[in-house]
Length: 122
Image (cartoon, rainbow, N blue to C red; front, top):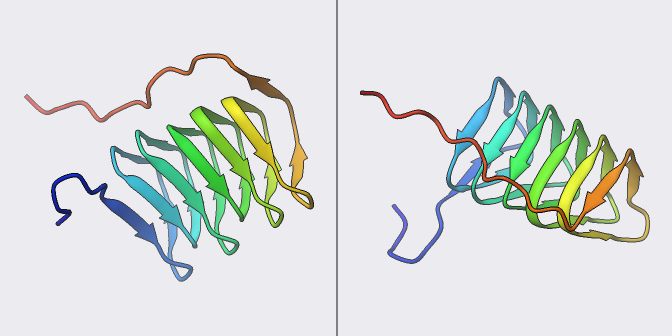
């Protein structure tokens, strides 16, 4: 359990494949495969071995692996040199390192809506 002030991190290791959606408030680190949408209020980190196929909505993102799908990133998104991104990007700030592959369209500086949160049960 995180200490007060620390952000919880959900990790998906390189031996895991998820078929379905991920919704939450914590940071998420992906080294495995996710086939489904991701909607989080934290930071999304995709390791070199990580692959996502689906729609993404996040606060910020650091991508070293591959994504096939659109991303809506409220703050800053970084495509590291090893990243491969096919889809559209909507973000406040985008950093693309030399060697990164990006195929799609980008809208910058547009305010993003918060990530979708799960509905509370009555």
